[in-house]
Length: 364
Image (tube, rainbow, N blue to C red; front, side, top):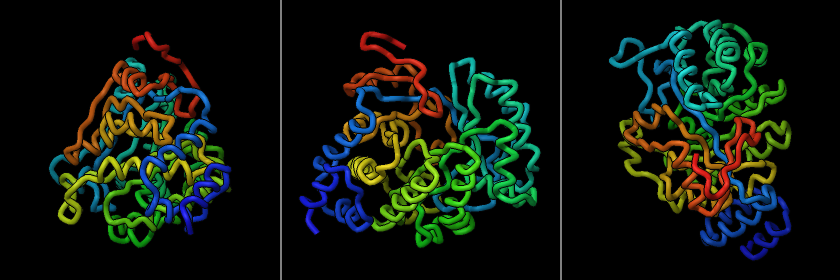
């Protein structure tokens, strides 16, 4: 196998095999990867626009029974700092966010079996009715599986009930690495790769759109990363339900896994992952760069390595904060960061509809 042969396939728009993807990840020069990924980005999204969403990521509970060793956020019932907020409390948060221009609320928490299924239905119904300015981008696959267990409904029935309440999109959280070898070590109680894929498959059948995510930089190998990309590419072939791919690196602070993996993944690794994902995921429209998880400068550089989206403003975020990793920004700065990277900022919805384009001299 030779890089030159694989590069020719990429330039011709041919799909890489998992073996070729792995060979590229292990052997390609970073700048070659970035150049190839950027070419594909411009084929899929020819304009200089880089999109972003005005969003927030609050949490309704931190009580969780799946005990992932990469997580510093969760608490058990009765532990200091545990909480579960009422629907009233969360609706007030959403209203405040909407007043700040937020159009997407990404709501997740823990897998808390004390919460009845009706709570989740009420949350969606009231959000749609009382805060119509925001889209309810709610619940990870793990929470949806938890709802099924609490309610006695099947996964499709749970998803249909949430759809009937007004929900239309699902975040991609809970995937981590879609390799059961790794999942058994970092999230043994959370379920298998097939469980995550099943929830997404059933959601897409109903009509939901969702993101696909990946958390790397812990116990995975290059082979596991390619397995993850292959799994979501296959599902996208089947359902066409993913809007974007969003990778980020593991943050070890305050987690049980910190004793094994005490360091952050490097910016170079992040750029490799962004570029490879843009090359490999030929059926995904968008690849999201993260100023939040990787730092603002690395996020800007990723825009030249195949990414075409800059994520969200994240007015509130608690999960990474629990791991002592905090980045903050605002709309003005996001616009400036995109412009400084040489692109035209464009505010989007959860579904990548353009709401506003910021011209060069225009301030937020």
